[in-house]
Image (cartoon, rainbow, N blue to C red):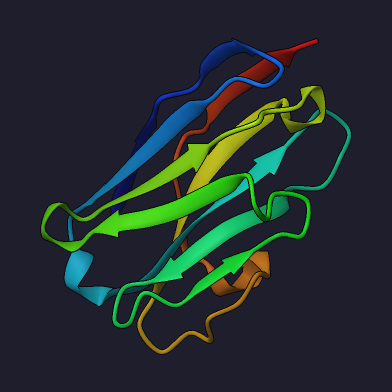
Length: 124
């Protein structure tokens, strides 16, 4: 499975960005897709995830009410709509996917495949 993320960029505080991640390859084996983010010197942290089968969603507390994750099953694509962005949202955002049989989780260990990362920079 390969994951291709796009949509990052530079935006002012209060602005919006939309990230996309498309899976290719053995996509039939996937059960969940999500987003993590990382800043230099810090651990990669969970942002949001969605389960393909029923659309169940998890959000990190820090993004609830501002970010929305959604999916297009037919295109094997997951989106992250990010509104009311804050400077502390600045990070390298990674798309991730978990195989069937994994627990639906916010932990990094539940995800088997990772995209290359797309940079989001929010200026104050």
